[in-house]
Length: 376
Image (cartoon, rainbow, N blue to C red; front, side, top):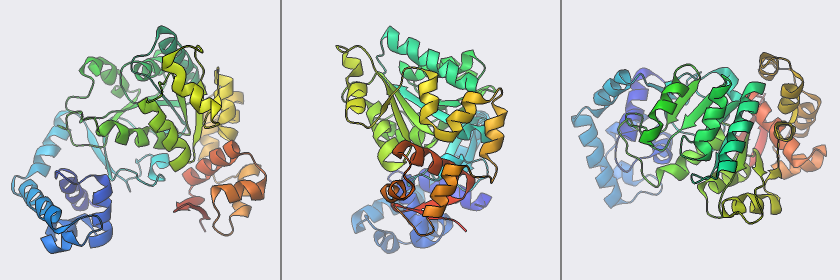
């Protein structure tokens, strides 16, 4: 994406009523973000899901963004707060995130993204976590980060903050995906935590413009990014209607990643969601780092046996396929669903999911709708 096209995509995302999904449909319809800025109301009305009235509102709002030169103002904020804007076709854009169906067109990033962050574990859970939940999250995050995994979470109170702090405590890497703009990242009480993350230990990430205030609808949306960045999602303390369960569902149903859950006390309301995930077979019960690594397939086994984190990272980004990966590649000479791959290869669900993720990172496999396709 050229600098001009990226600025035009930014103009779309600065326009009220246009989010990442609609911006993507605009590009598909008009051919580019630049063409979308020039489109008439009638052309906007032809986009799937937009009627004549909404098209008029969007066209007027977009014209205001252009007239007020809001793109330049946003870029000034980027410079002032040491934030970079990364487009989906930028080499720095996270590989795992690129392959989910609804990946963000642009990311706002404060800090540094590294290739090794493809080896990532998401840790999510209750904002009102118990002492036990926070203690376990920090303990497991520290162990996982020390083994070479990047810890991904949402920067919120409770389990999220404990996970980030656990990674920082051992000098590991962590990514905080927040539900607000980066001018005043939410929650305000975590500014020091975000500063630590961005200062050489990872990145604070958002998919919304710099001055966007936290809104209820932004948090479920950012959950797909938390899952999309990760090899698997670990849920620690989640009530029946916890937002962490949204991340777990996305992880399994939309992204084909591994879902894990830590059990709590049988009478703990904050663990009811975890227990349901385990009971329904959605999540694997884990209690320690070895359990987590077992869920991550070949990558987890490499992390278990490697004396340094660099060894599995170097193997991950080579073209050499493992035996299970070769079985999968042989199976998808023609496009197959996940269930068909499992049936043909005889591998377990979790193993197929983890190995497909690795093959996607390496560029050997891509998703097309509900099918997995071997790339030539």
